[in-house]
Length: 434
Ligand SMILES: Cc1cc2nc3c(=O)[nH]c(=O)nc-3n(C[C@H](O)[C@H](O)[C@H](O)COP(=O)(O)OP(=O)(O)OC[C@H]3O[C@@H](n4cnc5c(N)ncnc54)[C@H](O)[C@@H]3O)c2cc1C
Image 1 (cartoon, rainbow, N blue to C red):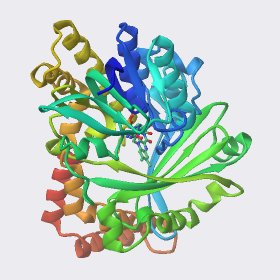
Image 2: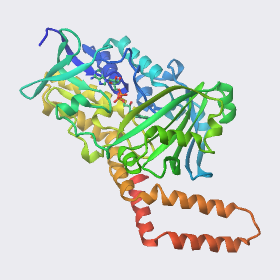
Image 3: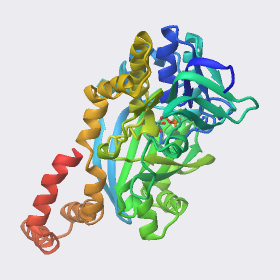
Image 4: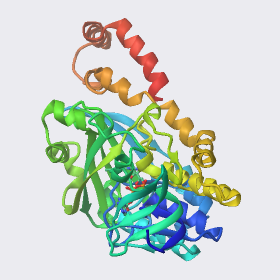
């Protein structure tokens, strides 16, 4: 072990690691963040909605100075078949004023860099271009990390792992469950450049207003997954993602699914004239609450995606859970530091803090969402398709009397839907998905 020693070493300068570093540094803790990218955010990717209730607590009115793209005033949830879309549209002037519903679009290369700088300004040391290769574990206690640098061991009272979804260090050390096709979404995303005036015109936005469109059902070939378009200032974030098991089942590659999505007659006009300037793919953990590991060990805490803290429901939240877990971990470390005790028993306070917060309450609420959808594929396939056909027929104008149209619709429902099965599914959907 080298002589390099910090009170806390954090692996990864994404939202989780930077939030933990910021809270610790403000309390005067010697904290080192090791990041493998050229700068924080250099290699990071997400769909595009940054949820900021935690950021606003840490850095009040951050939007005045942070590199955010747009604040989202309009959200749409839509389902497609081959030529039609139906959906729910929420647009509110309430979201157009601070704190903007804590919902912004962002690009990670800009946001992560800025957020990590706030931790640096508070006193954290961030060293980039440094890959942590393994945890140093002695007699069951994590004592530090081994990096790819020469003389690259760093000792610490506690290591916080914030390495993201591809949690190789945590997995190798046996501190979290293995990744599998049923608990990982693979998403592909393009950033498509368009002039701001065209975005504002096309999506009916003014100034820095933004829009989020999320697509289900036929948009992603009836899989447990979704597609999205988010408006940035001068680009669109466009992507699709579904469980790896779904790609295998349909024998389709993620980029083919994205190409089909982009070519859909309801999507293509929204992207027209744009130029793809970025293309990337990444995994999202969708571990159920029941599959989470303890998240704390002797001398170790797991936060953010690496801990599996992503809300897999229609809310699709990850960034805010990552930052909230970073704050909870930092607070548990501050207590442990006071007691000079970094044992597993002491660090259990981190989990207790999470359990008491909305983070675990939400993960418990949606613990069965993915499993329910996999076992009831009608919810993402037949039912959205049927809903489109019924609504389209109801509003298709011909000379059929409306009474006859309604009779036709009821017949379609009776022919295609098993009443008791659907009633049970809706009951379970209410409990697992809403
Ligand atoms: C395609 C996609 C779409 C998403 N869309 C959304 C969305 O719209 N809204 C939302 O809230 N969430 C979304 N998420 C989830 C969200 O991105 C994550 O929940 C969030 O980024 C987790 O933050 P984190 O800090 O835990 O991990 P990450 O952001 O992954 O950061 C991990 C950091 O650790 C570094 N690192 C990893 N291993 C090492 C190592 N060995 N040594 C040194 N550094 C290392 C990485 O370089 C990275 O900087 C999406 C995710 C994906 C993949």
